[in-house]
Length: 158
Image (tube, rainbow, N blue to C red; front, side):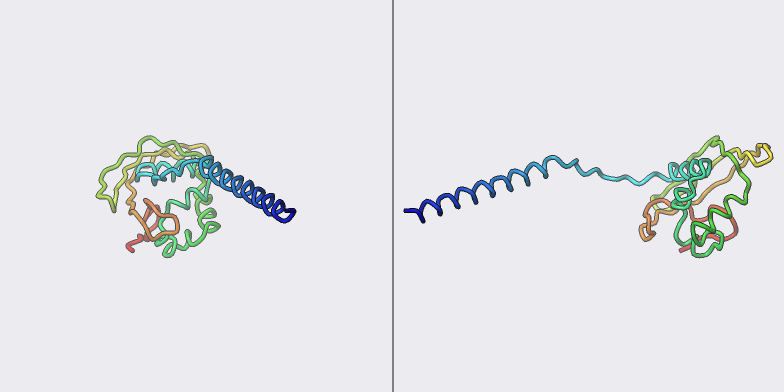
């Protein structure tokens, strides 16, 4: 009789523990936030990110939008420290974006026309405009739209 009582009690305890585990699991799965789909920035937003990061001296964010291929062929972009040193050597203190507009985009390559105003160390303001070519890179460490020729003579043709 005593054995039967102990077995029944143990069964009740195992059932309670199992129920608590199941309820905890269900609560955890329903309580975690829904997975959001990340959309990579458009070519225009990528160029805006580049100039905004430059203006705020956020070199890692600026460096992140340059293609890995360009980083391999351009000595001043071989690593973040070299890139930061090169960028700082330009003596550009502030950047005002005038316009950033998509000229073309076929889904793999995009041309973005931009117009900016650089304020240099001596206080002078210098207007500058040009066109960036971006390619959509799936093989880069950080995937998405990348500048393949942000400056200099080297162009990432990979």
